[in-house]
Length: 180
Image 1: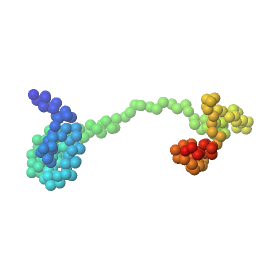
Image 2: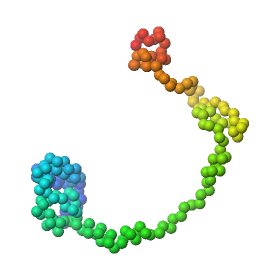
Image 3: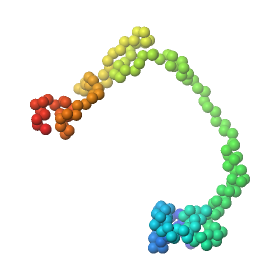
Image 4: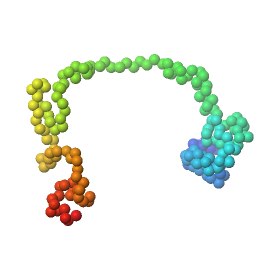
């Protein structure tokens, strides 16, 4: 029976009674969020309750806080953390010397940058020359044969015309514009 009770404590679907309103029964997984909302809704009750220093979900009357601190189940977890810190457990782990060494680096970015050509990047153009003095550019089209690239970029788009069809982009002839 005691194991079932311990398992029940870990169940996120178990119902917990709200300390602000005894009629509220909230699932354990939603309980911290509910506490924040109810604290705002019941400020008078919130003034009478104190928060446990070991678990913020434990809200008890201020008069009973010292008794709760003595009996709180979560007190053991905090005490164990304090013992571990005082014994230097974490300090020993942090001061441990690593045996990992970086692999040797075969790259030299300075020589690689000198070997590369100084020609600027131009979209759609390829550099077929070996050095920058004899550079010849050729047009390279990576599009399928039925698709062509635009001849110019649309820096300024004319927004005259209908906003529902292509006449707003100037691609429809004046004869077709009357139909929109």
